[in-house]
Length: 150
Image (cartoon, rainbow, N blue to C red; front, side, top):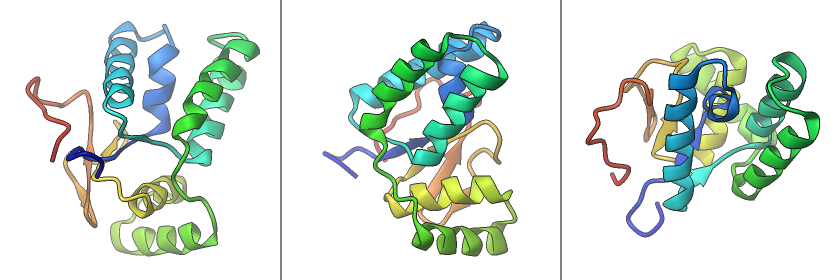
């Protein structure tokens, strides 16, 4: 927690939506969420989320040029402060054993948890499910009056 605000981890899918024009409503919501969290200085990412984002945008979906995607990922790299090491792997094993999420989701959840994030934004996991001290939140199910301060 920084300055009374909760650290927020943003799942790869929401990073992708922020610049992928194929789903305009999700693009707007993803971009708005990302802007707010960046403005609040509470965004936390991991190397995994940046690598996945690059691959999806530049290789799989090709929604922007490689250079545009690299600039976007480069901008986001400033927020890449979550750990991604063997200790993270061990934490992911524990999360998988307890909650049953997919392996790659467990790695992201472990990175976020070890970075002391209170919120994990994703549309792919159960909305409002708690993993340790962290709450998974789908930005597409948020109350309009949702507060990032916890």
